[in-house]
Amino acid sequence: MSLVEAAVNVAAGYVVALAAQLVVFPLFDVAVSFSDNLIIGAIFTVVSLVRSYVLRRLFEAVRVRGGIA
Image 1 (cartoon, rainbow, N blue to C red):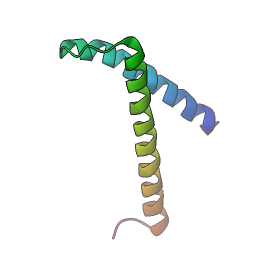
Image 2 (cartoon, rainbow, N blue to C red):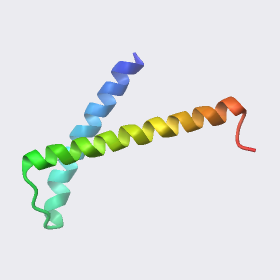
Image 3 (cartoon, rainbow, N blue to C red):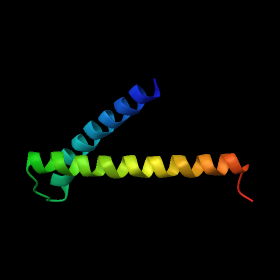
Image 4 (tube, rainbow, N blue to C red):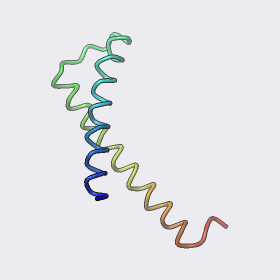
């Protein structure tokens, strides 16, 4: 089930990021086409996935060693 949860989390994050870009970019006079918004959202989604994975591995390593000394 964790794979389904992870996939839904990533998809939801992508949709939220895209919606945020569509609202925030115009507030800062950043003109970006919808297709560019899709690509930018995908890039940030990949960055978020990598960050999440690295932090999860880091915390798992700390847990296995018994905490931070």
